[in-house]
Length: 224
Image (cartoon, rainbow, N blue to C red):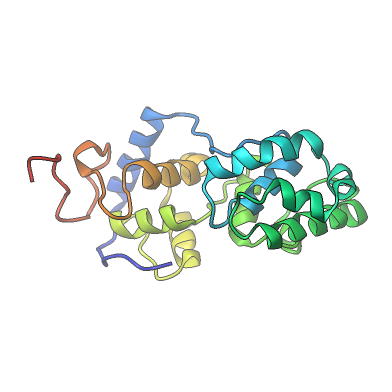
């Protein structure tokens, strides 16, 4: 992930104000991946690497109808899985990972998705970010999954500057007030996806612009 312009860190009061504003606007933020249960959530997140949520949802609609469980996914087979997800980037490798992780879930976890990081990260195609998403959404743990959007927002705003995703993740755990931790992940990712965009942040409509340290702020189109 490419770094962004280095900024100073926000103070405690500014961080509090930012998350209070997020909570006011969207008290219960949700991710945009479609899923039926813990297993399909895990699969959807694995498939979302270097792909859009919309693209993943389109591909998994039929996949999850046919294989909503590890046993059904294994029965489907690698070739059929590959065929169903071929519209997603890196689909061949992802199909192999989905098949393999389904086998492991059956053999080692009784067909259930484990609720601990070590077990999740031991699965094919599952890294720290994927594990954090599953732990946060399904198991309601206050984890933060740092994707490109969240990495950008953490650096650009001054919330949690860091040179790596892990640095940003750890920084956020230090500064985000405890009562906001469960939803911090979604607020920041959605903010980066729709407002604090990579090429040109839409500062003119940003709900946290008054606390953000990014300069110069992007003006309303036509007024710059």
